[in-house]
Amino acid sequence: MNAFFQSLFKSVDASSMAVFRMGFGALLVFNSINNLVLCPTCRYLEPDMLFKYHYFEWVVPWPGIGLWVHWGIMTLCAFAITFGYRYRLALAIFTVGFTYNFLLDEALYLNHYYMVILFCILMLFIPAHCKWSMDARRDSRIASATVPRWTIVLLLLQLEIILIWAGIVKLNPDWLNLEPLRMWMHALRDDYPPFFTTLTGNAGIALGAYGSIALHLLGAPLLFFRWARPWVLLAYGVFHLVNHTVFNIGIFPWFTWFASFLFFRPDWPLRVKEKIFSRKGTSEESRGALVDDSLTATASGAFGVTAKQVFIVTAMATWLLSQILIPTRNWFIPGNVAWTEDGHRFSWRMKLRSKRGVAVYTVSSGEQTWQVDPKTYLNAKQYRKMTCIPDMVWQFGQFLQAEWQEKGYSSVSVTVDSRCSLNGRDFQTFVKPDLDLTTLSRDQLAVNWLEPLEKPLKDPLWKL
Image (cartoon, rainbow, N blue to C red; front, side, top):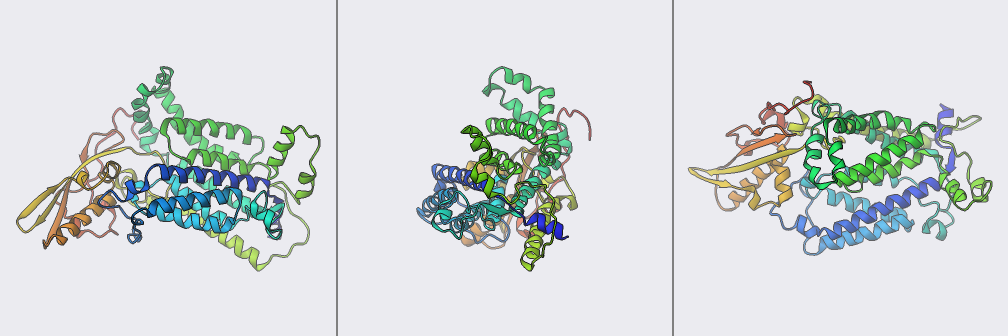
């Protein structure tokens, strides 16, 4: 046990952590500026309603130009993180601000936003500003050539959990039958050169579908082995480049690829610097900075475990165990998670379903009825998401009930005529007909009030 603690708390070079901080900060800068360009008030103030996460219904957008100011401050904080200026304060403000924005509208949920929040929280407890930062220059108490090994191990294990789960969730009948990847690739044929058509045959799509499973389930663990690391990183680089080019999924591919460089020796930036400037031998900085630059070295000798170290290890284990268990929620809920969405979010179920739907609501009060088209209240993205996500179907029903009650009507009931298509299947009824949405509580599982998925996949490779 002492050897474990000594190895985990041994000092390693801080260079790779400093580079990671700068790269992470640069991606946050890009994302923050992108949010400013995309007009935050258009997304959050123009629709008549926003869809809220359970227990966070109280989170509302800033009025007026507040969202512009919000993302302006976030951009400044992202720059401060990159350059290591007032690092912890800037990161704390950014983490709170980013989480606030994330919670504003459930319709805008993205896995890479969730990932950013997780890494921001972890980075708050890591002295990533101890080297190559403005903080280290202005305060010698912050400056350090080394960091404890646990700081790198924590980030690596968090990344491994994400990558491995991204492979596990693909072991489902639809993905193994190449859907929805096949329908997406076919839809893109006209947008790319002729050679792209070759890649969109069953053989090319199968290579992508099954190759992504192998890359996550085999490639991610192989990153721990020095001999395999360059080849896996090359494969991930190609994979993420294709993802970015074809699907344009934001900073997610670039972040996961860049974070993989933490698997290299902690002093790799110094070694790269030496090679670039053709300096022979090891630089004075590299020679003096390390107590041990290997992530796999064993510890020996006397070592006293402190209460602080026990607390850190316990906190790490609790955090990582929760990250492993949270994505298993849908295993214990009946129904197809891609259809019911029960346990879908926060489970790294990325690019696994394509849904198209239509919905028309009927509001009743006494003998009076009104048909409501949600498009008159929502923007295009909200409507597209809402039609096939049960929680959002329910929320819009609650919104209409409150709307009609404000108009003075009593005993308001709301039903919805909705149809949905999953991964290219034929459309089928989504919500049970004549179900009054106002009688449901948000805690009820969607599988209990949806029609079961009955339509089969079109042209499956095999039945699973």
